[in-house]
Length: 245
Picture 1 (cartoon, rainbow, N blue to C red):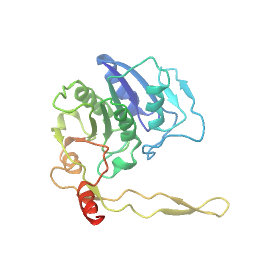
Picture 2 (picture 1 turned 120 degrees about the vertical axis):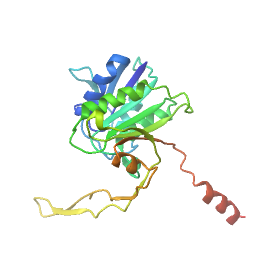
Picture 3 (picture 1 turned 180 degrees about the horizontal axis):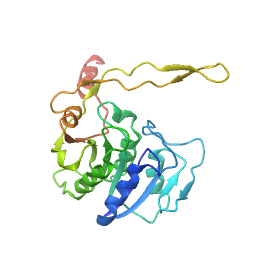
Picture 4 (picture 1 turned 45 degrees about the vertical axis):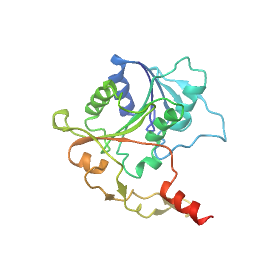
């Protein structure tokens, strides 16, 4: 198996290093990741400047761009490597519910999916990298699973609780939950007295009932959510068709 690995925390992040080490024994891997933290970059591509690709001492490639840039360049930029699978992560912090719209981790996987390659995004629920070795072990075991029941290509969003391996209860297939509205921006002054704004924390879970990703991880399970790209609101479309007659 050939696996392309990327992330949004940057090529030096403990999560991607642990993930690469875990997947090396079972696959031929290439790592192409951002040169710095690009969390929250979503599916953005860099169109206003050229992208540069460098190779680090550990063999990882890094790009002065977004996670989507990294995967796009890896797939179309002349790399003599055609992956069977895209794996993104391991992210520092959860990507559940509405987070998936903003997540660079999910975006890197999505970029591969758009090229017709199955893709998986892995995240730890809590920040701080506690038990990242466990998350990497679970990621490897998940990659080794046969997912023949899924239509190809697939796009999966996986969130792993930060806890010892023995305490994780298993895997649960879930749907995305939903958060309350984000908290207000944080206003500060820069050294010149100008008002500046920092994006505030994400909202708390609003829909976290049984069957959601929020519920699964809160109860010690790894949450596995299949994603799709079609944003068409089918029911609204039917109503709109009638309304436009």
